[in-house]
Image 1 (tube, rainbow, N blue to C red):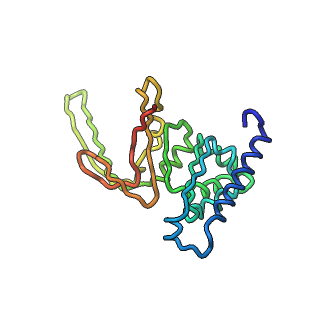
Image 2: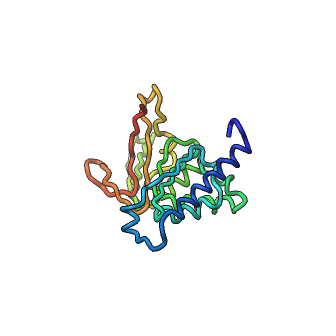
Image 3: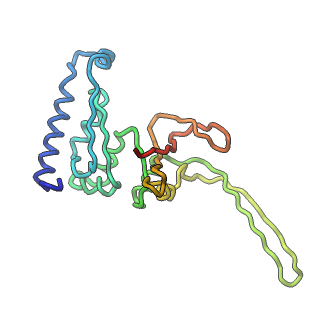
Length: 209
């Protein structure tokens, strides 16, 4: 893209489309799922800065990619990049429809509020107990009083600001890149206050090499 600009993007998108169609055709219609799992070689599609190369066919391909023994790995900076790419197809709804077909999502440090809010919404909310307390003191008679209480609220499992605080690697972070991994339909056991609690996400530190 940096060398050939629009022509380079067009050529890469065309190559990707041909590859996707070829992958979809390589499994015979009468071949059952079990036999295809044993006989058909798994393949993958990897795209860095994928917002430059996606189009409407990606959503269609991704809806059946698993049956075609294909794994799609798309890397991008933020959600608005996908929205701009799908502008002609409806913007954010089209982008979210595509992202909904990607089962595993790995979130790294991000400064975009829209992306962080969407990531928090994707992971979900839970009922949490919130504790409040206060202290008041009178000047004249030097008396004081305390009060406390608790309430039940529905809050994000991962707050949006947590995505802004993840380590980004490099020397200053000893080569550690923090990530929050989410996968639909999967439960991880997370260590919380010494207890193993099932969660639909897990925090992981990736080591740069």
